[in-house]
Length: 133
View 1 (cartoon, rainbow, N blue to C red):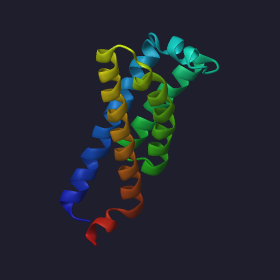
View 2: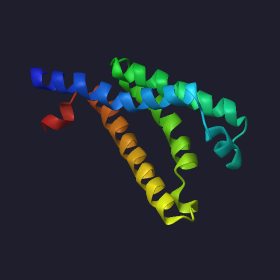
View 3: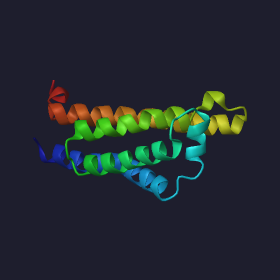
View 4: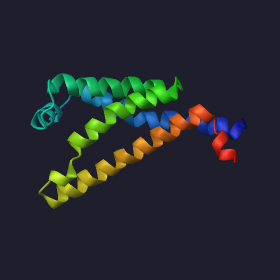
């Protein structure tokens, strides 16, 4: 593996992980309206579910950022991110156009993060060999 590839991998995973670590940590410190929002969506034990998802994001983010089993840590992040995205950023249910626009933006940002997690996992499994074809 070339030095440039190692450098990119060494920077990319922590950069991707940073959003999950800071976001999860913020929710652990103060979940704000998220448990009530989860309860409105029928999530059982909404306070515990909110904090569990946040803890998973911190744990998965730290692991991914450290390069520890990227497919596994990225999978943990995806498992936490998907229900969070569907619950918190449900733009299709928003009546206010400004709120709909903001939630749509956050929804698609999270889809982009899911794509980046998938790329990080595949890259870790192939060590970039697919890119050489």
